Every structure is written in C-alpha cells, then in structure tokens.
Image (cartoon, rainbow, N blue to C red):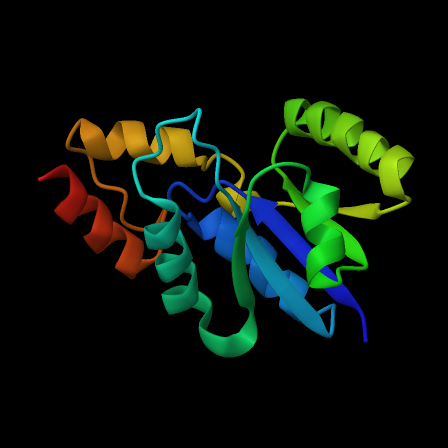
Length: 155
C-alpha cells in the first residue's frame, strides 16, 4: 500500500488544492493531507479550521493531520512513501525542487510534482485572501464551504 503526503498551508484551501488532492487520491492507496502549523505566520484560519475545511471537502477519502517542524519527520510519522506537491509556475518548481532535494538528502523521501490543471493555475491562497478581504468574489476559486467560511470570517 502506497501512502502519499500532500502538505501545505491551505489558508484557505483553494480549488487548485482540491484538484491536486483529488488527482492524488486517484493515484495512491492512501492520502494524508498535512496542514502546516507555523506559529510564526498569522494565518486567516486556525490550523483546526483548515483541517475542518479540508475534511468537509474530501470527506473520509483522505486523512488530515497537522505538523510543525520538518516535513520528512511528519512523513515518517504517518507512514508516507512519497510527498506530492502541486506546481503552478516555474517559481513554484524552483522552490519545491530545492525542498524536494533537501528532503531526499535528509531521508531518501521522494517527491512527486503534479502540475496544476490549467484552469486553476492562477489561483493561490494569498490571492484568494486578498480578493476576499477587498470584497471581491472568490466563487469558483474555492470550494463552496470555504467561500462561506471566508465570508463569515471577514464580515
């Protein structure tokens, strides 16, 4: 049984995230979505809220965890065989490739890069938050449950 770990901040989860996770579900036996808990950052949603949103979107087809510290340590804790990272741009590739090489150096953990479906390539959590904070519509950029949570959080 092959376990894939999909890490990210998911603040908030976007349709791009959903696309990558759904495609990962189709490729691996077990998928763990890992929410990065970084107290140095000030996320819009708490770690627990992000976990809840992901669980609402994907149901029991994934396991959702959180972690702080090294990704490869958490990967080992959940029994992951591979890390799956979505890529939107060349900048994403350069950053993620460097991280993948470091993770492989540290533990031998392999990383699989999944290019974003073109219709979601422009979506980022940061851009979604900015648009939502300024009163713009993020419908179609995030799952409905996330859209409602954003409206509630920002009202």
